[in-house]
Length: 356
Figure 1: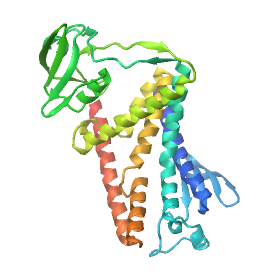
Figure 2: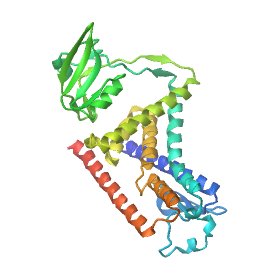
Figure 3: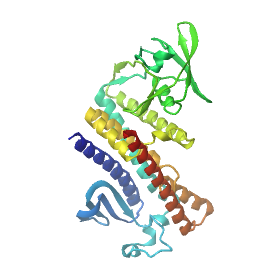
Figure 4: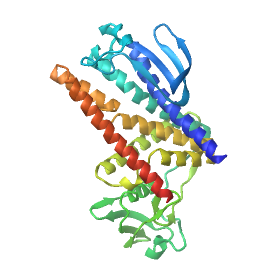
């Protein structure tokens, strides 16, 4: 039963995020007069279709994701065009629109994902009615038989600095320290403020397989305060910003080859979704917001198979003042697609390995 609820929650979440993304493309494309042949909710065979003024609106059999079919989204100048595309005037094709309009259409999906996350963060902050201040990196309780206890950490110790090899951090919050540890989990030297003394301790974080995180074995404490409803807009925006910076930090670490073992694919996302759905609506919606934001930012990466890559190609064409060779573009897109599939496979392998 828990598996079924988790599966429904997983499919619903990703479907809404994808549909919102595609809706952004569709609305801006129609605003600029781009011919959109079909807007589909779901994939596979059509269960229901309605012919609008210009666009076919479809509900398809597989309730997962969706898509918008735009004329000129792919430049088929050297390929046989589909029958419907032959009837579309050049002025209504995306690839014939001005540079700024093409970029706006590609950016729209990303913006919609970020907006969805923002709305969810605001709604969660408003429903909660209080805000939890960020916990300071101060030891509140040392866990029994933990690496923190063996290293000699004591209650009220304040972590001033952490070093691991050439990497170091002066954490302002407990979250800063925990996030840093996920990428620097060899032996760590901590500079600790205790009373009026400064001491150094060494410890090696341990991996918590159940929660897929590295820990050092002590708890910090955070304090809550009540908020007015209008503070939700500021708190929601703050949560959006902190989540965004965290995602970019993670990306920068991945580019440097750090934390690759923590990369998760669909199996990992499903597992986390199942857990959060069991924890309640608030936890589920928090994950919903984070996944939407992650997908939006991921699509902005300048890889040709993604929206960010398509924007890059349009900008290159603008600078060169001519179309990039379409055969070359298709090959680059295919290569980047293969690259993304390899990442997908590797992330899925990571997910499965965690269960073994």
